[in-house]
Length: 524
Image 1 (cartoon, rainbow, N blue to C red):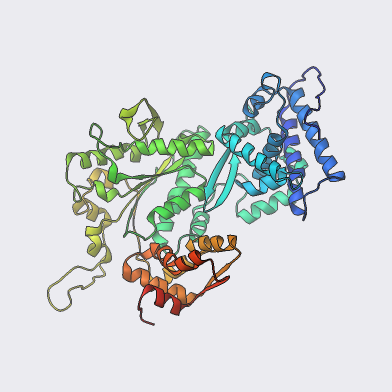
Image 2: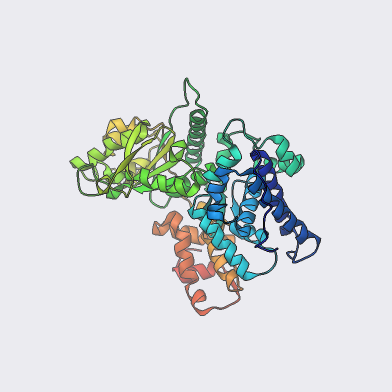
């Protein structure tokens, strides 16, 4: 297609965003259909159809004279026409996100928007994608090597339209793709259109990534559901009683998966996520970072997603035991705990706009009523109480009692947390100690470290296999060394170090005997 082709200069007609939305989705569907073919079309009727649809869409954009879309796409800026590659990328992402799922891989968009095997054009398209991500028209999220993109707020506003209801009606959607296809996609997701995920569905999704920890997944699922309900009520300006603000406290040893579970929950709920280490926080007025710096990190995460942080988010306050009076009794640790009350209550909280410390520049305010706050800590000095084993006199010095443990009272009396902060946790969960079987499941999970190393070897044309017996030996070694959930990655680093250095063999097989030989003598 000739990029210098002149558009027909006619008098602009009345804007019809619904027509433009249909044309964008229709063009995106046409481009995405080439992914089903073995080779991208270089010429022929299919390429002609793409060029015709592209010309028609560009002419429609000029005719409708949509100021909002022009500003978002930098279209007709100082007389310049819209970039063809940019238009293809926007159409593909809009169609796949609205018709298929909430995120699309960058690789698929690049292949769909490329009309051939031109590597230079693929590179330009990736540059266009990242340029749009910087402008928040598209949002890039990289997780475990997979680059996915979603629609940013400017495009979402365009498809949503200036007035309610949505301009992208069901009739318009049915004309772009069949109702059977949309129904099948919703059935695979396990959700009905417009339906918020249930706590049971969130629990099932967490179970795909988190092994064991039944109580933790139940607490996070219920809290996540309540957060979505509060966000929906706020966006719809509903008055009256709201679902309670969920705050969760997780107590457990290092390596049991506290931080990982919170990160996975944010991705399941598609909420901006900020993890903040409380060990470096001091009270306001002292040297150090402020606890409100977590809102700065949340605002950065929300900006990358193209959403407003006040519309819902997840804050993870890690190492909360480091600000307990038992760990370090001072005015600053107690002050930090009282500052955390504002986050837990859900009020207007001031936070720094230029960094983690409010004294470094101007500040802003954020409504935390729609935020899910999860605090976690090891509380290592409570290990005997948490496991139910207390040292005693006599031969049996580690007698374990089966008495129910009151975590709320324990955190107040011996945990070093003030009663005001403990009473604001709707759920306090004790992490279960990981067993060798649990660690073996982590080892064999496709989303775990084994999958990462397999991807590394696959890039070199090699394969990696590991059986259940070897994973159980790694699990036993992780328990004995105290690494727990971090054991599989440490074990694979030792097992594959020479293999990755030497670049051989082509087929890497890890057995139980290999693990015992590399990691030390373990009982068979």
